[in-house]
Length: 275
Image 1 (cartoon, one colour):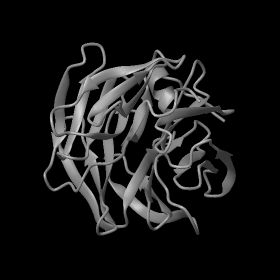
Image 2: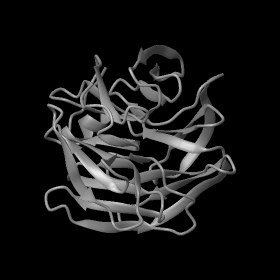
Image 3: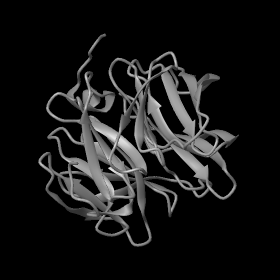
Image 4: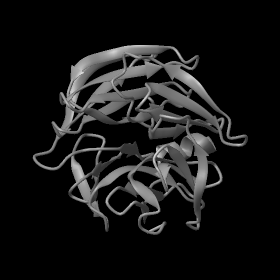
């Protein structure tokens, strides 16, 4: 474990690492905050979001901006990590509740948008100027979302339906050629991240594992955690091979080592690693 149990609420989600190895995750000590965890596990409240807003997924771009999906008020916030200034980067009241975020190397965002009560979901693109585009509706409960390391694919999972879909990502960031990537028979799906070899890491709430899936859609392994309700994950550490996992039932962050750096770490460090 990186942090002590129950430092975060059961709403712990959306970890992201900055270039210095600090981890940011939502809902430290109380709902509506962003917590900051140093590489040695010291935790504190980093910022408090505007009244009524609660964060879920986060991503950090190569300029060091922390993007936060506010699932209560239909916002994507942009946070200056150095000054802690919070601004509304994107807003669209047609969103159910922006949940998890993916980011391209160029800084274009994609957001999953579930409707939990109806077990349905939507998918959005947020351009670098903050413009929002509804890409697909009438999906299952969209949740985890990630871009492949070559920037040519977008993965989106549906929690309740236990399916992961993959799209080809066109040069104009439109989605084409949707197909089923992998389907599970039991347990739900939540956050996802790729490593630089193209393997997809997926949290499995209830089972307490992170599933590692090959680029061609085969389950390679399962990494077992202490807690059961793992919600999301990110890569960091000095070489990008440390995987940090947010765990809701224990309100903390667990960690394990991998053999390949994560894509999110590579973006910040401007690495292009070929396998």
